[in-house]
Image (cartoon, rainbow, N blue to C red; front, side, top):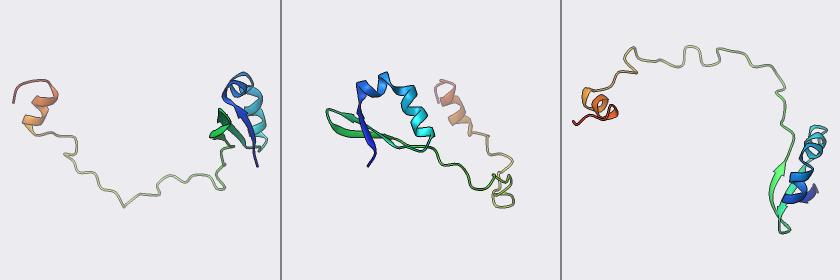
Length: 80
């Protein structure tokens, strides 16, 4: 089980706790002895991201950012 720290301890030792998490440890933050949060290391991608994954699967219409006049006036704060 992960080591638990109360919020005050976690605030005063935050840098050291982050260092430990970077080394692979998991830290639990508690309030009044009750666990409320967990510090865990971020997982790294096993493979580099390849751009273009959605290429050919998404179509954006030429007029996607055009608004009907009444809606445009409403956003501008004008009366309809």
